[in-house]
Image 1 (cartoon, rainbow, N blue to C red):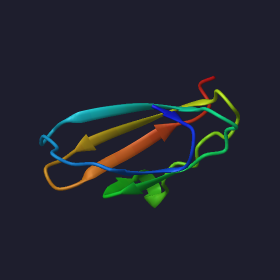
Image 2 (spheres, rainbow, N blue to C red; image 1 turned 45 degrees about the horizontal axis):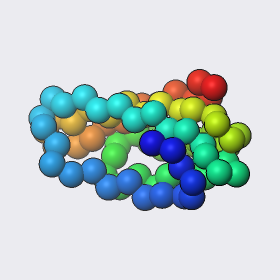
Image 3 (cartoon, rainbow, N blue to C red; image 1 turned 90 degrees about the vertical axis):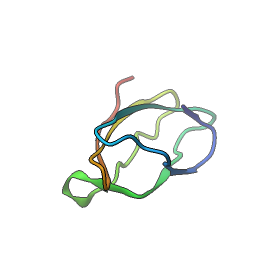
Image 4 (cartoon, rainbow, N blue to C red; image 1 turned 30 degrees about the horizontal axis):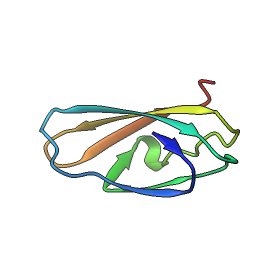
Length: 77
């Protein structure tokens, strides 16, 4: 997904054991963020996205039957 403004992500209809990946690129002028709904993050820390224009971050989610569990990597560009 390419961000051209800050966004809120709400996930629905998961499959238990499902793995989901999102590649997030900063578009426009960069510096955009995402508010995540219903995700438990490693170390209780949601991603702080790379802010540079064209920067790419990756979010990985697993649904364990009750919760989405999330990890992320920054600045692939």
